[in-house]
Length: 271
Image (cartoon, rainbow, N blue to C red; front, side, top):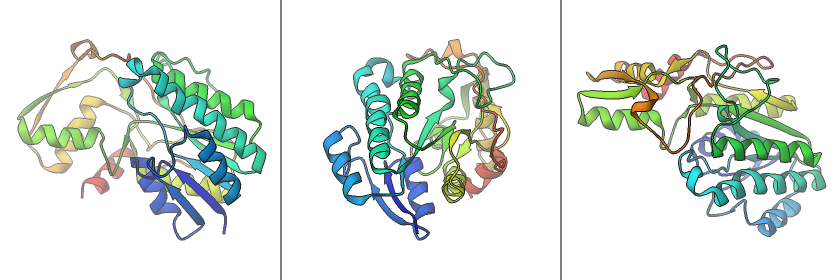
């Protein structure tokens, strides 16, 4: 059984990974309160004592708009701490499994972005996530970087937000000019387990199959939930945000088996 350390186990993806990896590995999981990845001394002590085969880092600063104002913390979590993790992994001979984002791209490719495309983030969150990727590559450790997008599952996410709004409103305005790939955290965790088993290395794009806009995503949520809510499509300019969003952040998966459609995954999540 491989020895695995999981960080960020209290987040949406962390919960799914903890559930998926338990039982098939010797797993030690740490929530943010149990292990803050920016506490470099604590991270080094735990990893060097445990001597894991894999470190799965699901800890991140994920609040895209907050990253624009809290830049020091966003950079510390998404870049500096990730580089530190990578260097420790290199020292102890562990492989680092790390998660990145569609927001490392600028959204200007109408066809979406395969793994080989050059990143060009347009917001500070994307910039810090790209810096984390670069720090991993520069460390010389063995790694698998998994870029994903539009995550939903157990926790705070777009699906839960729409369901809550739909209970209070019969009409909701939703942005229609941003395109991406919704991804179910449990499907992603299952795919990550396969990457671990097969010991794959490199940069991978993993999302549920298919693409949609936020407005059409919302329509599907209400339809599957049996809620009579009208979705009014609007331009991004109608909902200005501190962080600029890429217009088309579709991630093309050219390396791994495709996951099921986002619609099928959403239906399972809602029922």
